[in-house]
Image 1 (cartoon, rainbow, N blue to C red):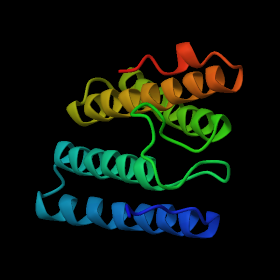
Image 2: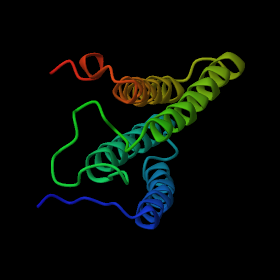
Image 3: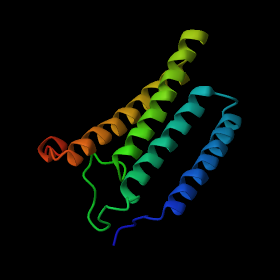
Image 4: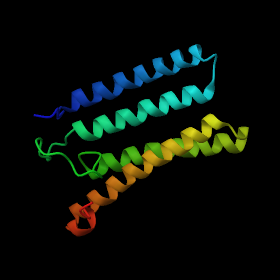
Length: 145
């Protein structure tokens, strides 16, 4: 049986521990590369994308079936969690845009802007499709792709 995590406490523990590990990875990459901000940004973004993929495939909501895999577009157990994560990622995107406007062009910020923008779009798509499922428009929610 595939790994499925349903306990809210376990989910929070995994996310918090990976945030700490991500911070440590950023520090190690920063020291190892002599402070190369692009390398740190790529490492952090890669780790964040891997966490999103892991959590999207293994975490399950209270009303979700545990055994079958989720549709490819569903990243969370519910509409509210998808919308919240999309909002947090969009807040990061706004911060990256602000950084570019205030400090000028930086390859690391552009990489983070694009990466976090793509993740935000994925979670926003998940929220919109889950909204369609809740509203009874399953034909729009899952195009069978």
